[in-house]
Image (tube, rainbow, N blue to C red; front, top):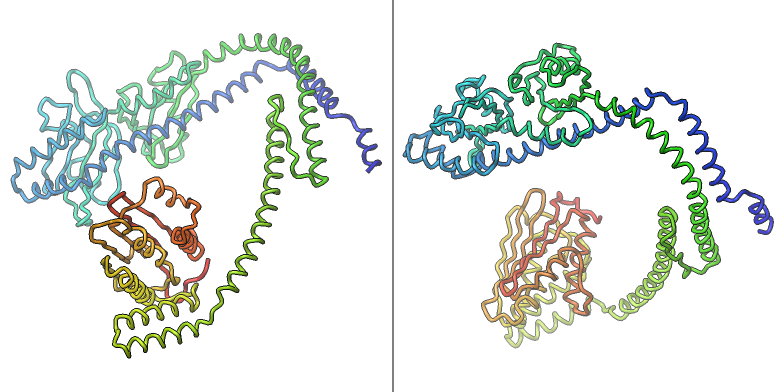
Length: 610
């Protein structure tokens, strides 16, 4: 140990190494900086601008998709609305045509006014009828965009009704209203009747103003004030979806078979004369969900002009900063090495076996050293806690073993004794007592024999009926129990004794102090790939804060065996079935409680302990 200390004393201290390293790394960069050219600085600036532009472009793409998702929600409200579907069926059958069309148009008017940039909502029915509400014609019963659309009404209907997807149609000239030209793009979907999924009764088209896309693109352009920039959208087929110059909207660009998209986009921008010169840089981002290309064009002329000024300022600032930092480095290294010394001293004490030592937090301590100190303190805390838990576990294990020995009673002695009492009751013609004793013997035999075993649902239900019968007998039939089991569930397999604690909790605690007729309902059915078990009572209910804690897996410490039994039952479910099993508790004070248990469906013979 002494030899090791001598070797450590011969080594250079961390403080000196930091000072030497700083001097070397500070002087050399200043010398190199004098030989750096303007073009190297320009390359760095350009890289930063490229990164910023690329990030903004991706954000624009995400924003466009988010905005369209919000309008797709509006579309979803329409094509899944049962009232609208019913009205369309009437129109297709020609029933109350005028009244139905007026009702439908009022509905469409309310939906159209619920969101900005929606210029028209149009429904095309199977029989060729058109019901619309729009803002671009003086006569709101007519929709001007249909006459200017590139597809016929039949082609549009066939294209949309063929599947259950949302179709996006690119921007096209729609109409001129109030001396202003409007360009629209469209979201379309066929109406879905969930009672008749294959029925194609109609399609709905939500027409949006291209100004929406322009606003989303422009909002991202505004974030980069240091350069001239603009953003537009072109789809994969080459059609211009959004563009600052409206004359280009709907124009088809010639992508060719192996064309360079950047060159094609650049030519479009140069032809439009958006900027005074043609020193433009093109960036593009492809949105796979929309099949759109989000394109940004940036003009860096002003940036390059400012770069020279910044270059001179940067040189002066660097020289001044070097002098200041030389003074700061000595102060910082002193703090750093002092903090490290605190950590090493605490580690040395802990290494000798004293786990109560802690590193005192210091505001001057660097965050990296502070993190090491926090982790060190937490590790020692965990080691202490672990030791205490280990001692507690050993104590609990000893107590459990003692209780197990105290509880050892020969089951056959219980069965034979109950059988003897049963025959005594029969001899005295006390048949009600005989039935209760017989049920009790069955319950005990079922519970004691392989309590963690796997049985058919049928067996578990029969056992529960006997258990409920005993509870009804004990409580003098003060509650009524209804059991509903789907036929196919009876042959499914389940772990024994999973449901009894939930039922017992409802009987003993739910009905306590409730004067109305006590009702207990037990249901089992299939939900997707799960067996859904519902245990519902009309008892006094549970406070909402306690329900929230129980659903979160938090159970208040209590000596109540029934409360502990409920927690243990939920724990057993997760032990047997893992995270696939779920328990949800719903309760309203003075109205009742409902427990929903979801157990994964497994084939016969395949239930295993997780």
